[in-house]
Length: 210
Image (cartoon, rainbow, N blue to C red):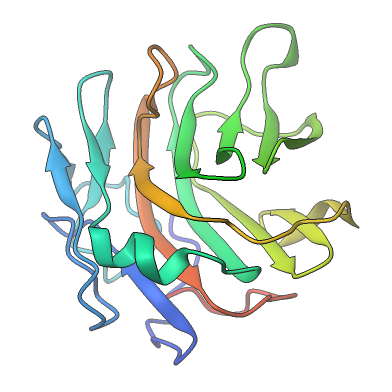
């Protein structure tokens, strides 16, 4: 399932992870990810963009950790867009796709399991928002969360799923960025992740994804 073909890297992109057999930052800003455990890569049909080389494959024992200079860059940031393609094969454990550990309370994006399976959760500085049960397993889905400094919005497959609303606030002092597995046990991604991008603007549409 291929969703888009555009590969233009926009000036507002702070970090872009294509997971093309590594965790390198394709934005040229140098925020390369460190592999924790062994992250395999898939180059078969599980790539959302035609020209992709591969996508990252995640299990209970692997994830990526952001570098210290990315923590410094994100600290205090209140206007942003975080977006990625996610191919989940299981809701098990309330998978946390990304966690920003910071001084104001963890910011994280999850897809919930249990009685709320398919619900996308965006926790930002101790304020929680939840969509309806909209996420679909075993296909590529595009998820984005944005903040304009005062409001935040959650998008699912380029449509507004929740918001705008709720004070977003800044990140505070960021101490780590984890992709694929949070600091607590059991909420890891089971599936694939590709084209993970952090931008320093609040986007309202997603006509292209690098």
